[in-house]
Length: 339
Image (tube, rainbow, N blue to C red; front, top):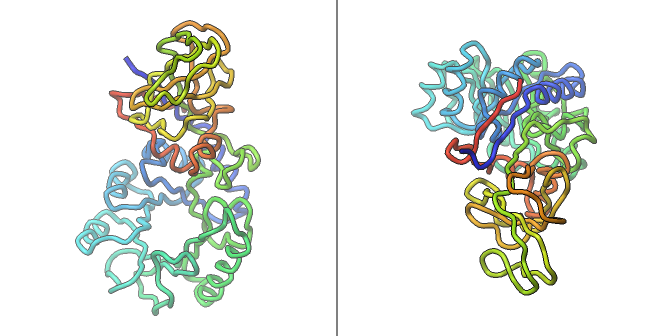
């Protein structure tokens, strides 16, 4: 019997894709589906994104690319991280396009030359003479979600470098944040990940940008008990009752991806927000209840007011890490895909 359930709403993902396409105003949408589609299921979200108008799938590794090629034999797939020389042959055979960040230009594979315009990570500082394998020029924005001024500097640098090639090569630098709020970054395509999943690249309410969260996560109350003053729950006695207090135990913990640093966040019990208290264990956590509630009462871990953005603020991280950290092993949780 499952301890929790993930629901992936592909209808919401399609609507998010359409929102991004409207914002891009003619530029192509390339769906970033690395890390198993940010924990949502790469094959499912890829199919929904393509159905909604995305024209490229973007991943981080050759292994991810090959898995998607088996499911999507005719779709364009771009591997965005550097690959080992031994993987070039696999990319060539599977018609996977590669981001090029230095070294010898491989032959027989479509390449996107990656320029470092300020990210200070992968990429080259000067553009070599493009060979016939080069089909695109790309860069990566460092601060589109936090520092628009620096992002604009990067866009200007990129525009200057790619200007001679605009009519012959695909140029792309925009991510989700830039697609939504930095129109000059559109160029020919935008590589969008986090917004596609209905999560805010700005760590705000996704609805501000017309986005709908795709993933929800639910469990139930496995036990309900009343603590008397001075009694505690969990390791380290981090929560002790100051007055008679009803608590509920939820059979999900950090082994499931409900992080140990989420103490103090709020989840929804029967739709009402309640505080997570005490130490989060490997397999369970406690919440304070307003009254005695029956075992089996539904608990929403992510969904509605219990958003990934809210949890991220409590944990001192970002919503990306919250969703990619959820364990989807069927021995711990079931996964329902809603079309």
